[in-house]
Image 1 (cartoon, rainbow over the protein chains, first blue to last red):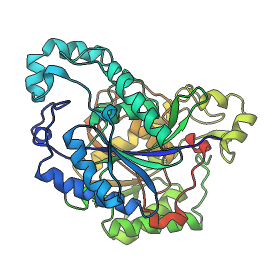
Image 2 (image 1 turned 60 degrees about the vertical axis):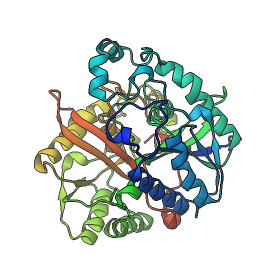
Image 3 (image 1 turned 90 degrees about the vertical axis):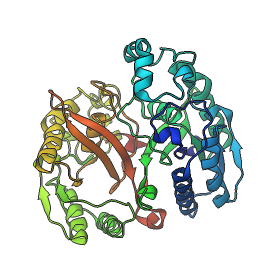
Length: 219
Length: 209
């Protein structure tokens, strides 16, 4: 008999660098005042969802912006935050800290190569998307699935992780960056996961970028 | 599968539509609409009328918001259809896009004849406004393909769309091929769990529609 897991992925709350449109990646920025309000709103949403769903665990990326978002959620649910290093963001190397336009002008060669080779082009002094998926995204999903069979579980992570998971579970080509997919701060994404016969992960995306809880608060 | 068979809402469907109408009115989804459009099929039209009634709006009809024409498959479950029409097996996998339903449309044809014209019509009629369009699973799946940024790729997407689930796309314009330029903002926003008794039971078979 197959056993499934319901996974909610939450993107961390806003930081100043998010609001300024800067690459952030592994730089460890805290959430800002707006971020704290978003984190409170998403924690209330999970408290509401917990009336019908028994959440087994709240995972967080090791980065501060994720832990600060996971904290209020875990507290509302009476759980501890479980830090999972594999939930980190992609390592974008030297791009981190730069605004998009600055990054594009300073690393124009990289950007033009990335266009046709999104999966395998290495971020300057960083990693490739393919490396990130195999080092972090796949093993994190495996671990979370195995430790929470037949349960509902929450993981606070990053836009890069969420995009990769959408591609993987929804079945879009891995070499396509899904630029039209919105991944907002404190939005949640819902996945119904199960094992395939050859021990891979499959399932279905059952909600994308849910932000009603933020809109209701005027965020 | 229903396709273009004009099956009306059942009691549960009416209850779902009323629950969504109430939730929209109460601001539960944090969204409001400048106008409401609907597919002419009864199940959509009735849903739209219930919501519009609650919000004090009129329903305008756009024929292109209609579901895909699945031809002779209409009335069968997916597994029945696959037994009866062996050519269907490939269609519910990688052959989704080009494969034509026996006696009906292909998804490719449906995109060109229905989905893109409907999006264009709504965009042209209601520039800069926030519009509710009540339509069908096939339409929403085909539409979101155009907003993910996948270019020409049309893979078989594994996602869920509940009855009365809300999906939001942002249309900024259209390219030279008539494809929308924009973003997928939210997919399958559903009623809260207090409505559990009318929320869909989803089976594996619903992976296909």
